[in-house]
Amino acid sequence: MEHCDALIVGGGITGICAAIELLDAGRTVCLLDRDLEANFGGLAKESFGGIFLVDTPEQRRQGLHDNPELALADWFAFGEIGIDEVWPRAWAQAYVNGCRAEVGDWLRGCGIGFFPVPNWVERGLSTRGNSVPRFHLVWGTGQVLAERLITRLRQHRNVAKLRLQFGQRVDGLISENGRIVGVAGTPEGAAGRFEWRAGVVIVATGGINGDLERVRANWHADWGKPPETLLNGSHRYADGLLHDAAAELGGRVTHLDRMWNYAAGVHHPRPRKPQHGLSLVPPRSALWLNWRGERFGPMPLVTGFDTRELVTRVCAQERAYSWQVLNRKIALKELAVSGAEFNPSIRERRLFSFLRDLLFGNRWLYRNMVEACSDFVVADSLPELVARMNALNGDQAVQVELVRAALEHYDAQVTLGEGRFQDEQLRRLSLLRQWKGDRIRTCKNQRILDRRAGPLIAVREFIISRKSLGGLQTDLSSRVLDLRGEPIAGLYAAGEAAGFGGGGMHGLRALEGSFLGGCVYSGRVAGRHAAQNT
Image 1 (tube, rainbow, N blue to C red):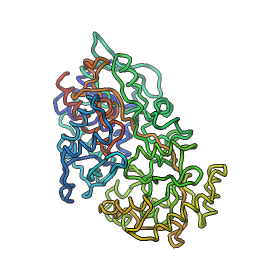
Image 2: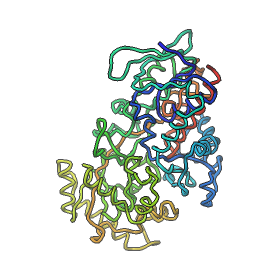
Image 3: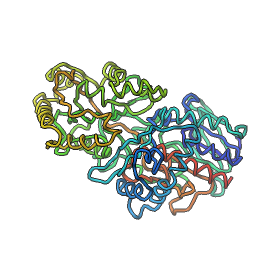
Image 4: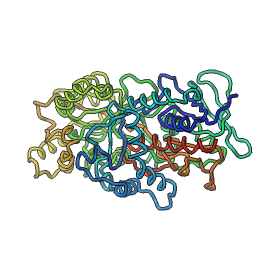
């Protein structure tokens, strides 16, 4: 049994940011993480590195007019956050008002830079979304984000007051006289028990989405029954152990059925965990088809507007997976994989390589996915492509006549030319191309059956589990609340473990980039307030 002023459970960027704040205040800190030291930084280290920010220098240089009032109105509308959801609304407002200084400016002070052109995602479809681009991509992806924060932690002037312990599986909270005074657990993969005592405990262990059985058990009613095949895009140790431990001691856990999953998951070519998946950024000029080869309609599926709607539409099918059909030309221009691993030119900050891929097509990624990912099939003709789609599935579910009818109808619409489209997907592509950040990554009126653009490609896509939007409910000091709405003495939660703040500050939907931003913001808040109560 050992003691410190503050104990942090979880070595993602939430825990790292909390530790920095505690060291700033001169507290002794122990950070326990279940993973290997090589993976310090958690899932953020593998992420694409996009952060939701409001009224930034990057936005102003692009002539974009943004402000917290507009952002909050977008946030509340997109998340459908009810008036009675007091703490989620309070955290949303706090984040929107504070993110420029507390996240963006603070990260710049850590030596982290952003792309000059923000991305415009989650624009909204039937529900209002982002009115302006707010997705600020870290130059270097989430890997550089995590590495710079780790460097700041390890080189802190008070680093002598920091202790890092890896391979620690914490599964219990220690309570005495109504106050949380420590944690208990076992070394990962080993026997025996340990206890740590502290003045305060901060839970920063992530959500539940790394446990696929738990994801299925909390599947949202809007999505019907969980898919037969569900991929894992979360951290393998995001299993909710400390959600349960806190709940046993009276902590309130809310909205676990609110998740941010994706519709375009594929099997990882080199899996590191069961059902390991990659989340594609779905090519916009591809045709999105259901399990039989029918085009989704009457409203086609197009990414960039409402990610949750894509998941809902796929899950409403008899079989909850889908296909995207495209050609090589579209793939070179638009195919992307979310995360640091498959974006080496951005991750390693190689500007020439990045510009080359942007202008001439990402041939490295195209070859990697076509040759190594089991969910990609390629063919020179449509009958051959459908045959390979069926061979991949081991049945005859995809019907060539349905696929041909969908592709020929779409291509006929393309030939009508700009301004004459009756196809909703082409209209939306025209809208997307009006923003420079999308124009350079979107094909202009490309027919799919164009022989000069071949070969043809089909991608089988599954629902992939990613993030928990719910979690331990917290007040604006990150104190965990009990079922009566009162703080549990000595217990704090931040990041995904707290639904990024308040037990679910996003509501039903999230404006992309608010996950990493929410981890940084809530981690700093938790560390700062915990330092005052040790």
